[in-house]
Image (cartoon, rainbow, N blue to C red; front, side, top):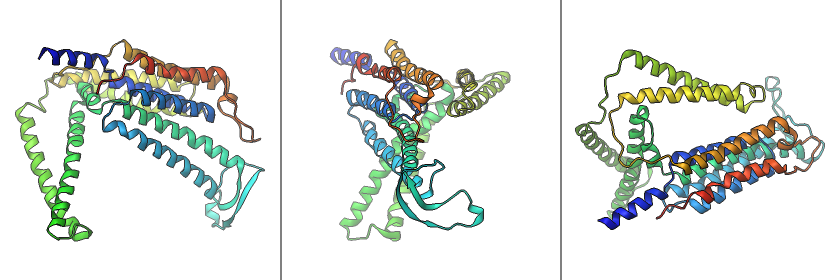
Length: 364
């Protein structure tokens, strides 16, 4: 027993708070939205991929990174396809190929199908699609590195019911898949069809019945253990919580929109920080209604602060570079020139490698 306890302490010390991985990845994704330079975007992808390769645990959710890579590639190809098929507002002189153009009615002015495909238009679409692909890859890195069950356990008390619903859904989904496979195999052994509308109905009804029985049993077990009980809080606290949460979420939306547009660069960051602070205050007050305890909660230690700070530093430095040297972070396509790698923004991106050296890999 003592030996198992020592191993449990070592395993807990090697774990990083899952929220730190998400904040680091989202900060890298924010940095990706501040540039269209393909060299900087490729460097961001390489940084996130290296951290995932060195710290990805041997778990089912960690295998989702390859799925995000394929999704990012699909997004990039779709962006290039639409630029070639529907045209682009970017003027160009280097014509690659001329497709047959489909005439459209007068009310569809501004849209064309086919026509000339220029190198400038494809390059602009490539830069734009690569930015979105980099953002998806950063989100995939967070999914591969952070344990979803531990992340849900770390949710504030105000989101307790939502976390329980997500945990139940994540738990029941594999059971549904296993039930479908088991019933289809049983029908094949009996010589009955398991495909088509008839097979789907005869397989789906027992699966639905089993899911309902399992849900009723789980609901009874949760009710017996006190789930859903809430504490009494004053009405003023409830109204303040609602106002702070809704106002904070609106502020986050407005600030994010400001950061993603050129016109809102001055007010985007203050509004975003104010909205985040108000939303966190609302969640803290809302947690008073939830009566619960956490078993062995994850600690937000110095390594979590370092990981979060490394990602936030990358995002802040790239935002600063985009404001003071926009030509380096947004290479032009008219005239068509080769992109160059700006030195100090590239060095700032390399700060995102800090988690690979300060966080030990979790034991299997």
